[in-house]
Image (cartoon, rainbow, N blue to C red; front, side, top):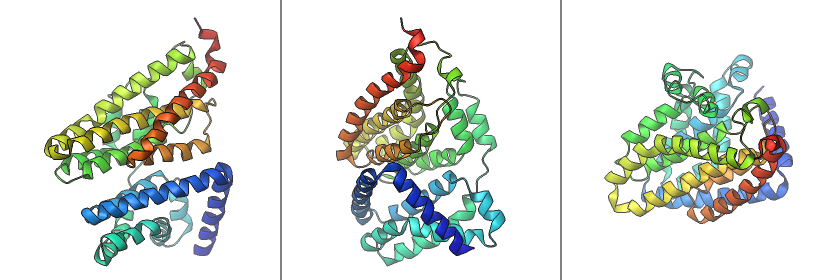
Length: 313
């Protein structure tokens, strides 16, 4: 059974590569190489971040996957299946940890990956996430569905606040939350929800970006402000990170509507959103996010004009 599951993963990986195209795949590999280089330098200066990076990646991957129930039903020892898959996925990161932080941190990261899997089995709906969604507007349906699907965001948020005294930890927490928020915008709403405001394409995008950006800025503000106050000596990094983070969030929204299909999920968008999220911690790639945001805005207006043409003034 174990070999069969590994073969299924191999076939799924190949199918995804064919869907996104070889050029995008090579570009994505190069981007991940830059990310690993960034991690290498970061772990050399702050070795404890290697533990946080490994644990955060496992929590994120485990929370986003949709076949956990199937594996628990069909496999005798599902925890070993999860561990072997995550160990394979994170092998490049583990090599970087060994080279930068040392073998002791590598061993600790591997043990942490294995131990954190049972803790990652958070129910899809929790009282905390349901309570939080009651404060959201009905127009903010992406967040309502997203927080109920990924309740780990609330514990991650609280952890980011509590760890503000450590260099970069809170910023990494905000970055991981941005990764989760990107998944909120992978699936398009129905046409009836799109036209409910009766706006044309330009006005709709303006309204959507304003409302979503305000909500997101208010959400991350306590973490960023607390971290910035405690780590005031690196204020320029905090400001630059926050500006790029907000630009990434806006570009994620525009990417969704640039390929809008009523009620459909566009798999290729997941690749674009991954690149956008990575650009938040590799500052030279911020230019990519800005350029992509401009082009995606133009495409989003053209795409939405087809559905919102009746509301042009």
